[in-house]
Image (cartoon, rainbow, N blue to C red; front, side, top):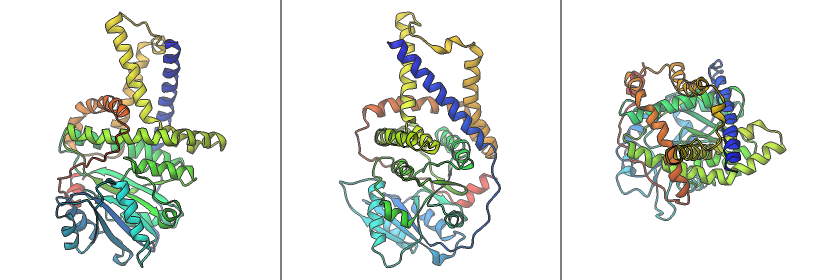
Length: 412
């Protein structure tokens, strides 16, 4: 029975790996830039902030410099349970500080839900809502790119999430490599194939009418993934805009990174449990590859978990029982096939960096430690499985003050 389970899981995981690799190939080429539309859409920019006095000022300066008519956008900073000077700094920059105090319903999802209700009650109504985090920096063309997509019928748009501090430590470099890979070989590939893209938590744009129709309703630890699933269920497929860049601050230490990724995986388990089977059934019923692909994306957390568990069981079998005593389909293949498979998996990250013209020299040196970052996802996911009912939101402290000009000059 154990052999049958192992063989079945190995075949499923191998098929999924080939499927994902095949999809990534469609991100190797970028389509030509679209035509620029005349600025006409109005935006409410929401910034979720909890005790962000060290970085929020830089974002306020940044948002004043957006290359978009000033009368067509307003900035609203959600000062969520703040106990520092975040609100004072926002007001000093002439922006709207919206203070919320609710110690019971903490977290970005609840803060956004509250802010949207406040927005709907205001005299001015906007065509779309853009969401950033307080540690972000947006490219000056961000709203122009969102306007382009909205004018062509897009209702939910995800910008390109880049890293503003990839050279600060080996951990920030690892995040940078991961996001370059995701943007190019996950998001762009699906965009090129007219598939649904997934939201990344910041740099997101939503048509106002859609939010009013659906409601926010995404209050899990991964509100971005939850809203992505809700959209896909309703045949609203998020679009990726490669040219709309937002720069995000990544944690400096392995400990802070582990805490953040643990929260992501805990929330991912919740979303997978809630949406995988309904989306899978819809994909079968409607013969929709788009919905199947998104259901599979939701299942990724279990793919990581099962890969980890199977590997540990095989190691224990060898170490304690003189194995292998468990059936392993991979031993039926020549040794070089395993080497090629692992090599291709690693090389794709390097290919993504080359395609994205990454010029950060330190990041290439830090690649030596990148496998440590990748492997660390396994125990984090394992621990998340047993703590997935922990709904307590944990704040990632941001301290890195960088200006957009600095980021762009380092990128060459």
